[in-house]
Image (cartoon, rainbow, N blue to C red):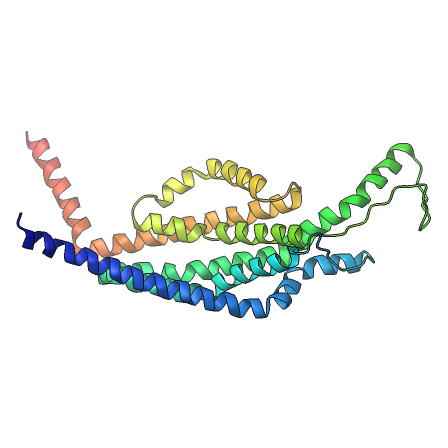
Amino acid sequence: MSNENIDDSAAPLIEHLAELRTRLIRSVLAFVVAMVACFTVAEPILEFMFQPISTILQERGEDPRLIFTAPQEKFFTLIRVSVVMGFMVSFPVIAHQMWRFVAPGLYKSEKNAFLPFLVASPLLFLAGAAFAHFVVTPLAMRFFIGFSDVIPTLTALVTGEVPAVEPGSDTELQTVFLGSVKESLDLELKFIFAFGICFQLPVLLTLMGKAGLVSAEGLQNMRKYAVVGILVLAALVTPPDVITQLILFVVVYGLYEISIQLVRLVERKREKELAEDGIILDDFDEDEDEADKDTAK
């Protein structure tokens, strides 16, 4: 191969790398701008995320405040909030840049098939994050914070005596919740990411169905294994309380059943398109002809 041929074959690769570099630079700039903008309102965002804890503490008659135990803890917590929210705000720009890089290499039919999933994926993640914040987090926080009341109650049931503790008494050890800003945010973000990712199940299975990697019948036959897998997932990504794990199981299994129906719709659409093109009919006629030949022999 001559040097000219080598240079010609290398040119498209260099153009693709240059295009990728441009898209990545634009994505990073969009993320940095969004992160800086979110940092200016990070305090209200943090208060919104801690609203479930504040509500529970008010219901218990306790001081609805969180503490930070290191001078830099509050600052870096706000940085983390800015990074997460900045990525979420800039995600449409990042997804658009990635789409502009990938789309020229796709057929029109592939673009029409893939684009709806690109739109549905962030919407489902937001739905999972909202479900985690408004439903799961209050339940989990109420369980954890209220767990300090369970031990004295169990002790009273076993001994038959109700311990009477006067306020300010030094005879009994009292525990009170002084939540850390960092630890509370970590738990909140774990819930958000866990449910946000779990809500991607319909998108993932439907894409696999379009690619022919899974079928509705196969997913139905795998139900019992899916139940075990979802239970294990619920035990790993949620705190050790039965209520939160049960909620995650019900939600993810419901998404699994929805995915089966979506894959079935994809299969019906594919069969309809094949029937319109005459592919299914031709295959059926060929099978009949071969059967007639075997019978004649």
